[in-house]
Image (cartoon, rainbow, N blue to C red; front, side, top):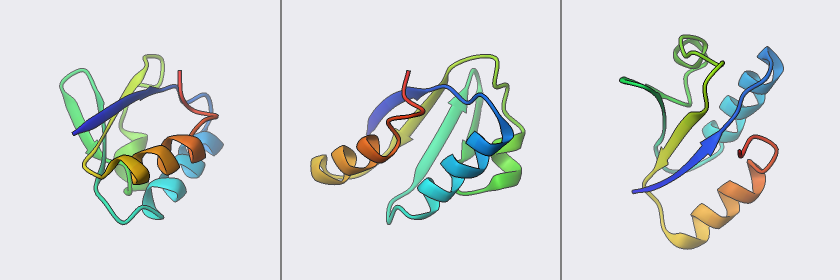
Length: 77
C-alpha cells in the first residue's frame, strides 16, 4: 500500500479530488483519524474533517502511483 497526505480547502476541492479518484482503475481510500472512506464516493468524502490533513491510501504499481500523485499535486501537503 502506498500513502500520501492531502489538504482539502473547499467543496470544489472535494469534488475535484473525487473526480480524480474515480478516474483511477484502483481503489483509493482516504482516512482522517479512525475514519476511513472510499475517495470515489462524494457523500463519504463530505463526512471527513477537512481541518486536518487527510491520508490517501492506494494499492497500485509505482507507475500508476506516480501518475496519480502528479495529477493530485494541488492537494498534496
